[in-house]
Each structure stands twice: as C-alpha cells, then as structure tokens.
Length: 376
Image (cartoon, rainbow, N blue to C red):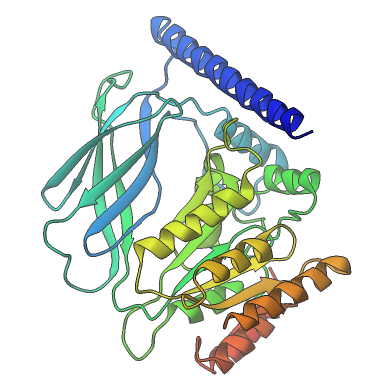
C-alpha cells in the first residue's frame, strides 16, 4: 500500500511538471506569434505592496500587457464586472522581462519568471532612520521594449514598521470580506459578479483594524499584513476594496494559481506566517481568520512553533456543530501554550476581548459597535 501511494504521488508530480511545461511553451508561442503579427498591447509594470525592515526591503510585482480593466463604480452593471474579471484572468504576462528597481540611489535589476512575476530585494548598508511608514521604490522596464516605444515605469511602495508594539496577520475571505469561502461555486460567483464597491465587508472590520493599527501614545502604527489564497489576478480589486471601505492599507500576500501550487493552501499560508515571523524577529503578532477553512489549524501550528510570539488569535465563527467543537479543542491547546484563541460571533466581540487585553483602546469598542450597525 505504501509503495502504491508513493507511485501515485510520483505520477501526480510528473503530470504537474508536464502540464507546466506545456503551458509555458504555449505561452511563449502565443507571445511570439502576437509580436510577429503586431498584436501585442503596450506593457505595464504592476507593483504589489511590499514590506521591509530598517535593513531590507522586499517588493514583488508583475510585467503584463495592458488589460484594459476599467475603473469600478458602485452602480456598474453585472456584465461590466464580469467583463473586468475576465480581463484580469486573461492577462498576458511578459515572461523574462528585465526590471530595474531604484531606492534612494540604490539600484537592483531582476528578471521576471515565465508568469511575468518578479521580486526585488534591497540590502541596505545603513539602517533607515526616521519614522516608520511607506517608502517609495521606482521601477523601470529594461527589456523587452514595449510595443509602440516609450519607457515603462511605475512606483511601488514598501511598508517599513518602526516602533510597532505588534503586527497583525489577517485572512481576507470571510474574515474581512464576505465571500462564502466554504462553497467554491458560491464564492466564485460572488467574486465574478461584484466589484470593490459592491462586495461587502463584515460590519465593524474597518474600525477594528484601525484600532489595532493605532498606537495613540507613541505616534507609531502597528503593521497589518493580509494573506489570502486568492490569485494575484484580482490584486487590484482587493486593494480597491480595502480603500473603498476604509480598511487600513497593508501588504497583500496572494497566490499564483499555477499548477504547482493549487491545493496547497495550508503550506502556503503557514509559509507566509513563518516568513513574517522570521523577518520581524522582535515583533509579536495577532492572527485573525475564520472557521470556514483551515485558519484555526494553521494558526495553532504557528502558536506551537512560536508560542511566545503569538499574543492572540481571533477566529470569526462562520460554521457550526462539529467544526465549533474542533475549534474549542484547538483553543484549549493554544491556551495551554499561553495564547488565547478566541472564536467570536462578530467584530464587536473581538474588539471587546482586544480591549480587555490592551491590544486596542477601550474607546474602540463603541467605534466598532457603531461600524457594526452601519448599513452598506
């Protein structure tokens, strides 16, 4: 039985490798054909919100052909939202693009992968001084030349916390934004037919996250990192959603929905958490998620590995029955390790607990409660 299981694993791995190679060859052929026929659209650099420390800066982005996505409005028809979503997933990447990143006189060059994704890392000889906040990184496409000529540039932004008391790592689907993540088809329909204005946040989330971010006595702020298994294709929509609904800015960690990573939700999310804990070695964290998928299991594993670093875990209860019993058992284990894992029915309950432990100011409770009664 064991040898049979290993054989099946090898077959799956081989199938993934072959399928990935076919996909890469097809993309390369299509790109070359479009170039020969003069059908390429102008190129663009899409930077994603980055993060860093006083000594290192990290920034990820993608080089694509312009997709023609239009600015979303509250009254947009469903067909317009569906068309924009189709354009997001039909985006044509520029494999192997060369990009130069610039920050305060430093320059780093990098090459995009076959999906057009690139990553930049600055090692700073001298630590950054001054207050924490967002730092700007200039980006320029070096090659290939964009159709029609002209320089392709963009500005990325990197969050460098300074003086933070703790950091927050938050899920998005069914934690910040209503998604029905427990039903794949229902979630897909919600995502496709809506835009940043019409997708709804959970009541009080914006006020609660602003309270967690705010450090009233020090003038500094606590960083918030968002981790989701949603694809990078909808990055712009998620950023617009956070902006429209007043949820604090923060770096987003999304997934490349390639054949090699599909279905690896737990490994991916736990990997991001481990990376952030390693990057910010002296910073404790608050973890926020929901009961619908694997957040409790993932967060409990983080507590097991770093019990002194995880000061609280909040789980929005979107399930019932057997799942609730499982979460109570996990909360009991977390408590023995010194971390409170709290299942909450709504955002106000989370704010009340956070206020009782000093994570947010007591006055935040009324603000969150007011936000919880607001209509969207």
